[in-house]
Image 1 (cartoon, rainbow, N blue to C red):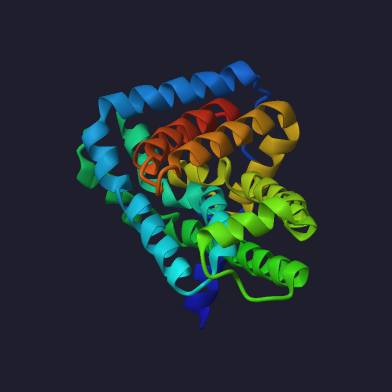
Image 2 (tube, rainbow, N blue to C red):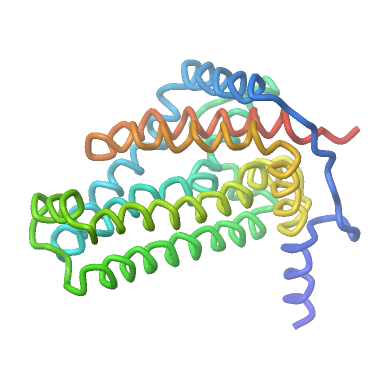
Amino acid sequence: MAQMHVSQIHIIGGASDTFVQPVVRRISTRDVLDALARGLRDFAAMPSHVVFLCLIYPAVGVFLGASLYGQNMLPLLYPLAAGFALVGPVAAIGLYEMSRRREMGLSTEWKHAFAVTRSPSLPAILALGALLMVLLLVWLALAQWLYQSLFDVLAPVSMPAFLYEVATTEAGWRLMLWGNAIGFAFAVVALAIGVVSFPLLLDRDVGAASALTTSVRAVIRNPIPMAAWGLIVAGLLLVGSLPAFVGLAVVMPVLGHATWHLYRKVVESPV
């Protein structure tokens, strides 16, 4: 019991006995664009590795999309695609490690991406990852509830029928309006939770509480640059999801590497 208690304390507080508050810098949109450019350079330097790691995302997307189509749950396809933005920070944890190693001049063989499984912060990473997964599940449940409350029927039997309902009926317009508004709120929460928390935990064993609050402070201190980053992520994920999620094999690694460099710009390294 005592060992479990100590483990829980470590997940929340990290290696230090005190609550660590890393210094958060003020950045500009130019820094955001520079982080994206550095992410592209990392991708160019390690294409075989990152594509190998990220092929799973298009495969999972196609599989889930086909499953939902077969189960007559078409209204969840769009929320599911948008949900990549919610869980993306934890899904890209191996890419942060690759960028970290390249930054330090270490070997960037693909096997090193799995070194995160030996990180002392792994329990905290998993805890925050579970939080984002819960956020995704709640978002999907709300999306399903919204559709059924507006149409009061089960999902249409075909994609053309569903698109026709959404584009030509008042209920469909309300679905788009409220669905995107709710999705935007979830995206803001996910951005605040994950924009720097996962790279920070990979870099330092500060605990889930410190990582989460640091990420929130980074967003509050830099609202315009972080809003620009959120728009970039949403836009690239939308492009990457078409057609059939295959573009995510490129978009995910670029965003993953760029997130690491954004973290470096926002959170000051310890002396």
